[in-house]
Length: 123
Image 1 (spheres, one colour):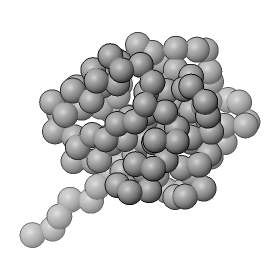
Image 2: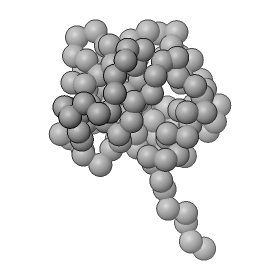
Image 3: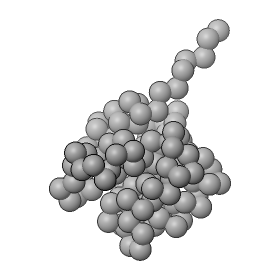
Image 4: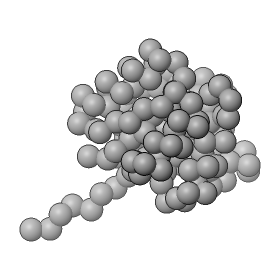
């Protein structure tokens, strides 16, 4: 199962997302802001990063930019309650997908499956 880094400043939302993903077998790392997320990313090298847009201090965009500078292959998914669209040219290459809050469990799981394809081991 993919290793997922959740960066969300609201503790109740962060805990709920972590529990949901863990219940579906994912290894989940969590951070409350972008600086903590970057430290965890560097130490743990998750397969995918899911971040809130409206973080205190550096935003979700700033975090996405930092992740892509460190490893452009790691998918970044933006979680936002604001009306943000992928058509904005400034987003090119920063995030692979935007999920609207409240995030539907199926959408989150499908996104992880789509963006983190692990080849099946051949026996």
